[in-house]
Length: 102
Image (cartoon, rainbow, N blue to C red; front, side):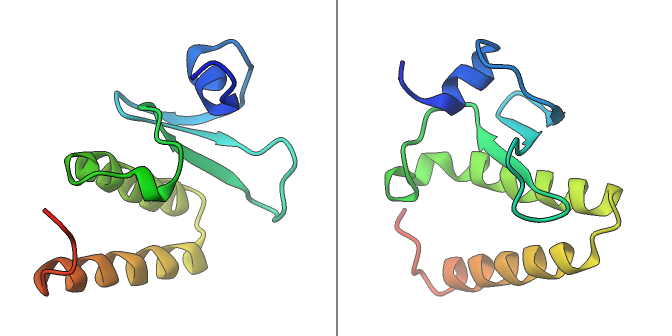
């Protein structure tokens, strides 16, 4: 997607202060932070919105959660870890109950 700022960051066309990167995600510091620590974690695959996530993207979604956990742990952000844990528990529960389409 040519007009997507995140795609431009991933391609290196727009510079970013990268915190973590692997084959499927990129994490970087927000240039206009709304909190003392404000890091964005984005998939390298273009996904326009949460409504565009498909079941086949579940590994990317897992990588995003694991990256958030790693970044929060490295920066001793205990409140962020609690939120990640709550989100993971919700996802696990929804998956177990069959609420996630497959």
